[in-house]
Image 1 (cartoon, one colour):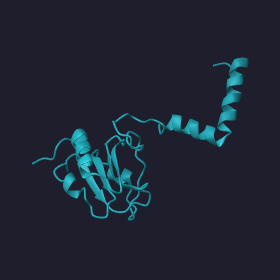
Image 2 (cartoon, helix red, strand yellow):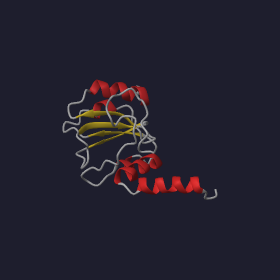
Image 3 (tube, one colour):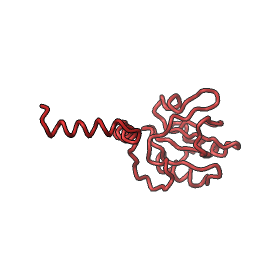
Image 4 (tube, one colour):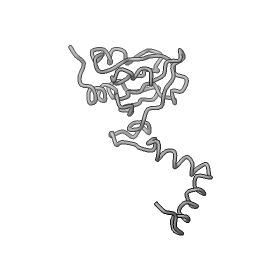
Length: 143
């Protein structure tokens, strides 16, 4: 690609855009894929996006839990209310519970093996909604 007067104008525009905080953020989101959101049928803003690398108090990160290619249930609730719902899906799901340093005010999150959030619930989430999402993405529990 050879520089020409039109190309120089576009280059100048891009330099100006990247020179601003909003422009840098915009370009980063487009290049990194963090602006992508798949329509998974939920109004919850995190669903359909790449999962943040949640960190538990012991230092374990979501990325650490995803090494074996299974989906992950992150249960931030104090009563571990998703433990029973995750039982029977161990071959497809890894269950992790505890307080997270950056839980974004959520009570639980279901992450697909590709790192996309399949379901997220607030602190007072509906366990049945979790089970519907888990069944959709990971099948029913093995009996």
